[in-house]
Image (tube, rainbow, N blue to C red; front, side, top):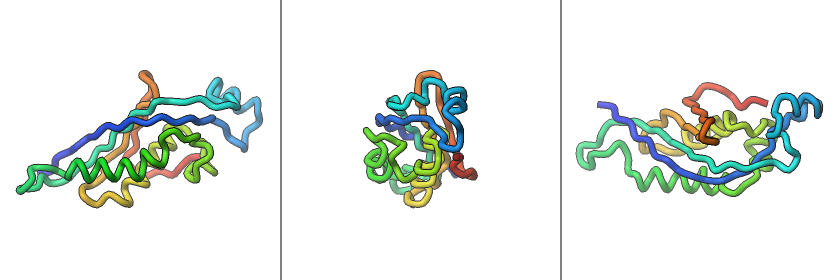
Length: 140
């Protein structure tokens, strides 16, 4: 029997949407106010969904403390209160929330062994959310 668990986390970070391969005019047209040279910030909500069999002894897909500890160490400590443009994950990729989804998924899929990572979802604003469930590369 396969069950799903989704856990929510919060962090704040800033970014500037800018592609070095495009001209200033192209960047302004594509990214609009998000191309502000000084950047802008978001209070992100991250949802991590894992799946697995329900353990007969514990009744859980995975131990919440294990999941929370891993997400805290690998995602929140890495991204919280950071300028995403300065991080290694975005040295060659525009730090869009789509690319943030892919980066977070890659980090989580290679380290958390207590359940299967299904997807990550970021809520950037009340109007924008993004999901990623594997299979793509960061887009430049």
